[in-house]
Image (tube, rainbow, N blue to C red):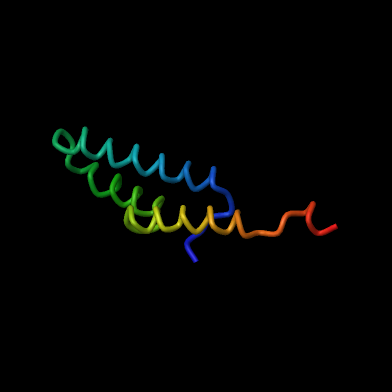
Amino acid sequence: MYCSRSIFGHLLRGLGAVVLVAMAVIYGEMRPWLLPPLLIGAIVLMRGCPMCWLMGLVETIAERRNAPHADEAR
């Protein structure tokens, strides 16, 4: 349900969300008009809350482990 196609892509989305949240914390006091777009961007990248992102990562790893490999099909 939450899983991505690749673990690398999922981690990249998480890194982007962390950067946006850090920018919101750093620049939020000086430029409060930046807070909503930065936080909304982080939520979109995480596809919800941080727990949703973490569950998606766990599901992506589980799908990778349970997926049949092309070598085993022969």
